[in-house]
Amino acid sequence: MKKYVSIDIGGTAIKYGVIDESGHILTKREKKTEAFKGGPSILGKVSDIVGECVNREEISGICISTAGMVDTKKGEIFHAAPLIPDYAGTQFKAVLEERFKIPCEVENDVNCAGLAESVSGAAMGSKSTLMLTIGTGIGGCIILDGEVYHGFSNSACEVGYMHMCGSDFQTLGAASILTKKVADRKGEPVEHWNGYRIFECADKGDEVCIRAIDEMTDILGMGIANICYVLNPQTVVLGGGIMAQEEYLKVKIEAAAARYLIPSVAGHTTICFAKHRNEAGMLGAFYHFRKKQSEKVPEVGNQVR
Image (cartoon, rainbow, N blue to C red; front, side, top):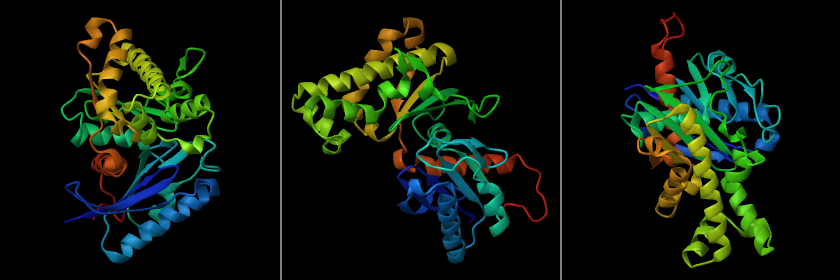
């Protein structure tokens, strides 16, 4: 059975492992990204990971999910946030294929998460899916009939930058903003707070935490509604670490979206929570690789073995 190395590059950690041709994750590990060291360092870490896997067993492909805007044809980063210096221009596909003589495909991490949920997760069977990841910022992607919609210049669904209420979607609604808001209102260092503690305190009746969560879910509902008016997706999937609080958040977000959507749209839009969570990037990268390779005419010396 063919095996593939799949790598999910995030701002904090690089998750990686080996996946078989049926999409089963056989091994899973991670190491620190050390994003502050920049793009060349990350490329070096990824190359070492592939080398580690190739030395253990026969690998038929390299699948990469990464932060930043990705040119999926070239397999390189063309825009990235300041969190990772010198990341734009990183040529994963060219460098790794040259070194290992194994095909490589690269896709944006949120697109990978959406693809994973569409193929084998919460949005299986959905004709059109909006994926939102709520974390340090807010990322989005749209899947139409099983295909990621990239837009004219590979920049579709960058919804975090969407202008709202004198600011933008991610500045108002990201999980990181929730933590900062609670810390500021309590006059405490932000390091003393995280999503888990905020929801734990909210469950115990902490009014500051409850109000901050309500403000976040209202913004998320407004943002979801605005996107739905344009895209009219069948399914909206919510991911990101904070969405593990599904039991607390589901009713609030559904109610907020309903406040901003007309009934004819709200009644035909299903909001659900991501199934794959921490494995979404690795799985989505594999699904993306599989699709890209299936579209190619096999070339001598560059075939999926």
